[in-house]
Length: 407
View (spheres, rainbow, N blue to C red):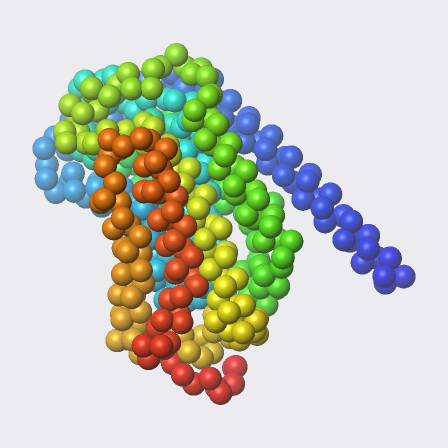
């Protein structure tokens, strides 16, 4: 009787996943359609808000830089720093979850921008002051997507993995809401997004968070997830699905019809006027390709973990779990060793990115994409997950108490 019950549960899980995924897709489409229907109204309201804010801050150096700091709270630089800190002081698996969330944010933003081709306010409103140069289409707001998905994920990780008491949970959630609102408000104040783009970005960001934790039901328990993480079938599903969507993105970029009747570089002159010395490679096409190249992060991260367990740890999943829990060799080190590990990780990140300087921005766009984005980003995540701990261990920047018992 027990066996039949287990079999019934196993057959129900895929069905439940399909039902949840279908519901999620439906809600996502409805949300995008609602934004399209109210776009002009929201856009006009947003212009009023932008004018009020920019008239108030005028040329106030302090306020302008304050809004830039708020915007930075969802920028790729801070996301990278958060990932490195998690990798260094927490565990590799939490870092992988954050990689997945941030990659989904970049990919979701890239696809929708490719399809919607909705310009930013300063592209055709001459009075809008640009305090933070952004190029490429603006709908949805990538910063809004990242702020919602990333900070909700951080809240969930801390709440679920570190057993915070109710007071600390409420305090952390309050801080997260303040950070999110500050990021959204700053994007309007800096003149780089309209109200409809902020709202759609927030909606898509929450949808990504919901997809990962409530549709796919990602667990933050290492003992539950490491087996499926290293499972051969799951590895193929991850790699095949990533490359499928990657090539779909290339097709969208090269062949998707322009539904909004906007030429690709119609507003390029306005961009270069508002943001002088902006290279052509930072405009519409290259920005879209850069977002699509995010697909290279996840296969690199996963294959790096696979290599770490299979080669560095001689196929010992138990040892990998212990290392991620900080039982030995990694987390339990002194402050100086932690700083040195961060320095080593930063160097490993910079080596592939340094190749960018040797590629001319005027080269063929597909060549730029492969050499400046796809290969470097894949190399970064693969090296990070495959070799950093091995290198730090060899350099004596980890704790070698291998016989310490797990508590």
